[in-house]
Length: 65
Image (cartoon, rainbow, N blue to C red; front, side, top):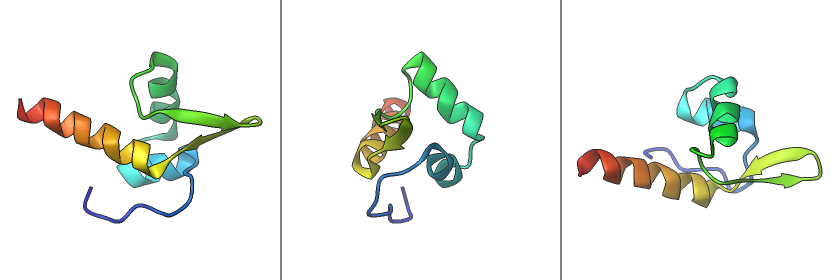
């Protein structure tokens, strides 16, 4: 990722904006267990920026292989 990640947990909208995908794609990744690891704070879904970075790196490694 070329841009620095925020120092706070990301919402699904933040993640979609960061990656340039529709918000529904973020929710589909969650349902299919194929996106970055998320967690709930009460009823709110959040993503740790470091988990997002690790997930992106893993995708890049798969592409390079």
